[in-house]
Image 1 (cartoon, rainbow, N blue to C red):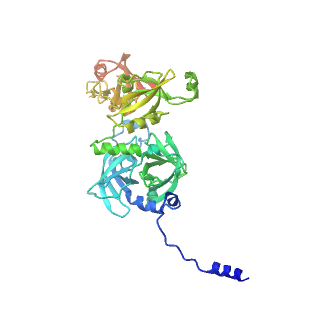
Image 2 (cartoon, rainbow, N blue to C red):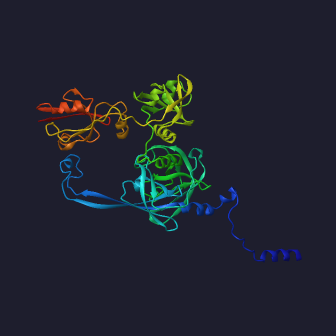
Image 3 (cartoon, rainbow, N blue to C red):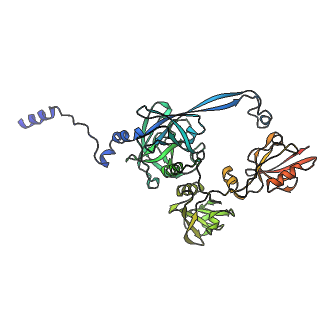
Length: 459
């Protein structure tokens, strides 16, 4: 009886609360993200960007034919577009990474730190396709930073935090895991490439924010989500930190635009059917179908039919992965590319070069004596093909601007003129001569994407 009373008295005694303390081990820190958040959030910033655009109101603006005739119709009205996003400080002197769709072409950028300090910023390097931009804060020193992690070491299932400013409500942290790696073609918008997938909640305003691991290192820059409602459905994408590191390297080197190596090859992923036809046990890699004469892969000994399986030891199973691996290898360096030919696997050194700007573009604007005055055309070369995303082996001349009369015929910027009145066109000089000849009618053979068109007009 006495023993029972003692037990009841002990249980009834007030328990003294323990003093809060910072977790001391990895096991403890996974139970609370608070210390990690305190360390990382000072280096994640809010970005407010403005751009001024000239807008013309025309009743024909939605008509693909008549809008070409009324491009200058109506009074131009300047409009201010505002964008909201996030960024991550990468250096103490004020280098910040964000998304291109947040700050690209902005005329005024204001960056606000977590402690409410504000800085003006300028974009010093950006790329719309990669959807990354590097900003430089004016007169910034001794800023907090988030260190970069080698994103190739990230594994599916790791705990991660997404930090940003969703919907402008203020700095917000959400948790999740790495849901997938090497995602390509799943993100929407301008970004195309290789992404880390996460289920950490990402919403509008999180763009450009940090995706960090449990050690507080940046593994990716949040860029987009897949959603039908506009809110987070648990499928978010982040640009890997290794590509961010290459952007920082080029920005510090003084580059004013991001340059990635040019492969000069075309091909397709090896699927089960292709693998069976080639006698492969497992579908892997990209089978090469064509190589441009100036391709560094051609110079290294690659041939049509070869299978590219890895770059610098990392598997490559899609064009987006190959582009990413080459971009991380860096322009001006070399990459060790694994090639599979006739069942034998070899490693080949390939130079990482920019797309050659040869032969000269020789851009020309057709004069008043031409059949199509105002038409602007350029020669095709690897640099032009890469810039406009044209087929690798395309031939002809590029339409830079159709001009008023070219637009009436149906020409568009980006079209390839392959022939004029049954004469094959391979240079701007040929096109200039053909369009300056006396003729009563004209027929222009055009390639537009995968379409072949013939446009005719009486003169």
